[in-house]
Image (cartoon, rainbow, N blue to C red):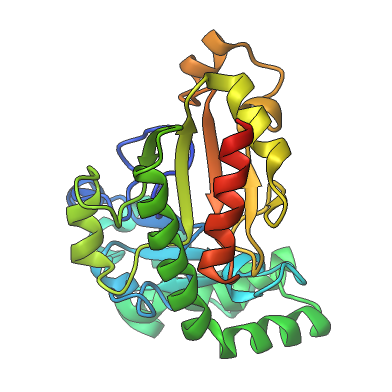
Length: 287
């Protein structure tokens, strides 16, 4: 399986980290490799909430339910969305688990019994969930179900707030750079317009002028936003990797890892946009 990250990049710069890799289908299907996308800042149901279904971008997607779907990080879970577009039988030698009899499940051959559209997801639910126990507890399932009911409303707010934050940061004198696919001129803007016409995501990355020390002062000056490694929460979560998740690295090591010392990851929540901008403004003054 070919696994890549299905979101706008928030740390680093990898060719498979944009909203959708433009050559994803070609790279995967031509070589008989099923493509599975990790949708960290996306949402269950493919990208149908924001405009484009999972079936248009590859073999399928794995969504982390503990983030956007769960609304407030109250439960751990996830969802697999299978597009049903990958021809497993055409590359049967690579996928014997799908194209040969499963003796642990009455000898069923998933591709023959359930077809191209149902083979993978049926195996995942019938056999793999049985063997690995990857099913949510009742309370977690209820929390995730409740969160999904308001998902379209929250996604619209995440995206509109993030767009406003990105536009504000782009014009600020103390901001060195901004990366957000919703901004005209961003190198992933055309892809975002094509695949995510209703909004790309709620995560903005930017650099604070002055490097690591200035970014640390910015973080210390925040009052409304929460300093946290979590993303896609109902509340705004901000992370400065160089002083948190990557704090043991020096500047040279950070550069080798593709993490700029001045990088701030701003996961925009559901707060009032004016309040978020005011918090950014006063924190940048401290930087």
